[in-house]
Length: 284
Image (cartoon, rainbow, N blue to C red; front, side, top):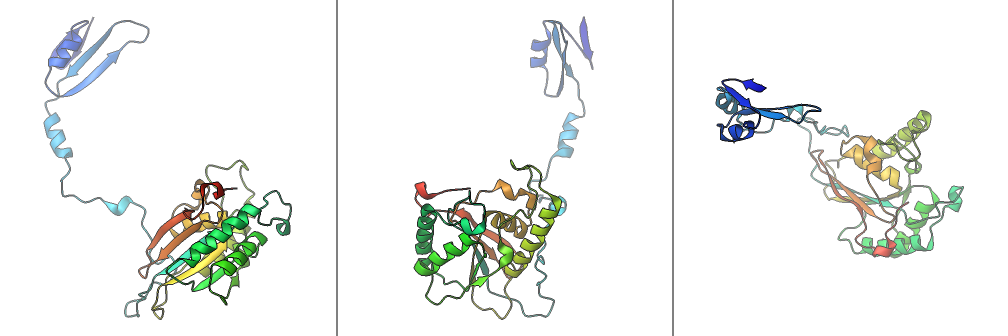
């Protein structure tokens, strides 16, 4: 039997050598299931050169961004109108996860920092003390492990007399169903809705561009929790919030986000633990 294509007929046994000698063009392979014979047919393609030329992209052509996800620069609703004074300062949000804690506790008051968590927090405090900036604002969740972490930071890392603000909406929770689901499976919708509303409220209180009256760059330190940090990072970067669980944020780590006057946002670091020795880097 022979396989015919275009002007050429290739018989069994001669197909491969004939194909190898053929000029550049389009090829087709025919195989049989359950049989031992095979043949390769070379297909004449008189227009292949024209098709390649048509498909060739101009070396100077730019990427078509119309089909890409667009970044909303007015995500905070504070974009200056035409004629308004424009801001010049950059706001930095320094998100700190609390130290290692007793995650087997049944109540919040029992979920206190472990010895390792206190060691982590003291090292973190020294890291903050060495920074070339002074916090403009210090905010903390009202949960015990966050409060204890901040107490150590205030004692060993921040200037004396630094005022703090408690935002209850920063409490840990599940603000979004992650995909793929965690070992916990699919969350209850009402629980997710309540937590999302609460965490979104905290997000609006913290994430926004500077006002035009602000002339110096600022650094807001926020001590809170892993789920909250990961969700807020996705939200401010305008990434799918259901991706939050794909990130890892160690205890006593730094996550820094810069918000520019234009509304652009930059993740400067995520879960940074460069200050901690390897044996003190923990997750839970």
